[in-house]
Length: 548
Ligand SMILES: Cc1cc2nc3c(=O)[nH]c(=O)nc-3n(C[C@H](O)[C@H](O)[C@H](O)COP(=O)(O)OP(=O)(O)OC[C@H]3O[C@@H](n4cnc5c(N)ncnc54)[C@H](O)[C@@H]3O)c2cc1C
Image (spheres, rainbow, N blue to C red):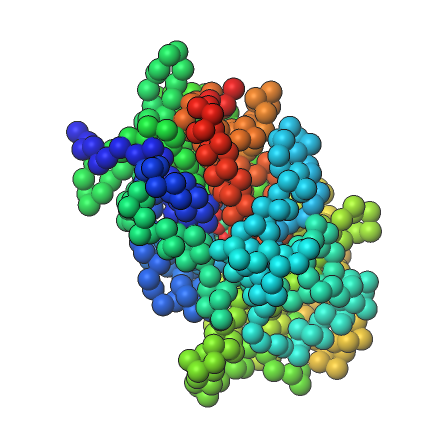
C-alpha cells in the first residue's frame, strides 16, 4: 500500500544535467507546481566542487551509480566501470567539465532523420542562450545565461609542444571550438567559475530552490511510472518511489518527465512496462505499451589512451608524487584558485580526421599532462603525457536491458564497442595518427617514448588488439530513448520528446539523441533540456498531451 505524497503539474525524475534545467524552466511560472526527484544526495561534498575531485567522485557510491558493463567482445571480453552521477547535478557533478557543443552536421543529421527543430541553425541560439561566456557575448558565445564557461587556469609546456606537433601534422591551431566545425586544436574551455566546478545544480537548480512551487526530493528512488486509461488512450499519471523506506506515489496532473539519463531512463520505462515486449515478458513485467526501441541504440565514445614517457619537462606525475608538490598545489588552490587542483583532466583538445576521406573531424583528442595505468591508480613516478583519442561517430550500437523486475538491480549495459569493421579501422588509423604527432619535430626534444600500448605493436592486427585491450569509455552514453518520427519503429520519443503511444510522458535527457554528437555530451544535454522545457510550456498553453 503506497501513500500519496502529493499532486503536482509536472514530476521530473532525476536532478542531473537535464533535470536541473527542466526544474528551473518549468517552475519559473509560480502557478506551475513541480516535483523534482533525485535518487542521490545533495551536492554538498567538497570534492564535487574542487575540480580535481572528480578523481574521488568517480567509482564512489556517494556520487556514482557504480555501474559496470557486461563483458564486451570488442574489448577482448573485458567488463569496464561505467560511471554515472548519482547526486544533485548528476553527471555534471562528477564529469570532466569540458564545454563542447558538437558539430553542425550532427544536428543537421538529427533534423534530416525526421526531427524538425533540431538542425544546427535551430539549436545554435539555444546553446548561446544558456551560456555565460567569460569573454562576453560574441557571434559565437552568449553572456548572461546560467551556464558559465571559462578558460582553464594553468598552462603546460608539454601540451603546448603537443599542439605545435599536431600543427606540424596538419591539425591547425584554432582560437576556439564550438562554431559548428571543430577541426583543429585549442585549449578546452570548461564549466567552472573562478577555479571551482560549475555543475547543472549550481547553475540552474540552486537559483530556483527557494521557489514555493518547486519541491526537490533527494535520496528518493523512483521505481515505476504509473499509467491510466483515459478516453481510449494510455497516459502517465505519476510515479511510485521509496522515501525513507516507505512506499509512496505522487500524481502528475500535466506530465511525467524522465530525465534519469541514458542508462536509467530506459531502465525505468522497461520496469514500468514500456519497452520490447519479449524482454518485459521474460522478466514478468506487465506490458503497458510495446516500444521495441527502449534501451536499444546505445552509443558511446570509446577512448584509446596512449601514454608517452618524456624527459626534460615537468608533468603532473612528478608533481603529484612528491610531498612538496602536493603542498604547493594545496597552497596555490587555497590562495589563488589556480594550479593542478583546478584541473579538468584534459587541458588541450584537438579534432582531426582519422583519414582524409572523412567529411569532417571524426576523432577527438584529450591531451593530459599525466599518465596512469588505469583510472583510480596513482600517476606514474616518471614524467609522461597521455594522448586519449576517441572515434566521434561510432557505428557500434549496444543496449540497456533490465535484468530483473527489481528496480534496485542494475541493468545489463552492453555497449558493443568496436563491433564493426569501420570502428576497428578508425581505431587503428587514429592510433597511427597519434604516433605521427608524437614523432613530429616539436616534441623531439622531450624524447617521447610510447609505453602504452607500446611501440612494439606495429601491424594493423596488433593495433586492433591493442585497441581492444586499452579501450575504455569516455563516459558519453546516449541514444537509448531515441528521438524519431512514429514511422521509425525504433524511435521512443517524437521530435517534441513525447513518448510514442503514451500521453503525458516525455523523456528529456541525453538518451533522446538519435546519434551521438561529435564531442562531449553535457552541454548538448543542457540544450536538449532547454528545448524540451520550451516544448512542454508551449504544449501546456495549447493543451496538447499526446505524441501521435
Ligand atoms: C566521469 C564523466 C566525465 C564526463 N566528462 C564530460 C565532459 O568533460 N564534458 C561533457 O560535455 N560531458 C562529459 N560527460 C558526459 C555528461 O556529463 C553527460 O552526458 C550528461 O551529464 C548527461 O546528462 P543527463 O541529464 O542525461 O543524465 P545525468 O546527468 O546522469 O542525470 C540523471 C539523474 O537522474 C538520477 N536518477 C536516475 N535514475 C533515477 C531514479 N530511478 N529515481 C530518481 N533519480 C534517478 C541520477 O541519479 C542522476 O542524477 C562526462 C560524464 C561522466 C560520468
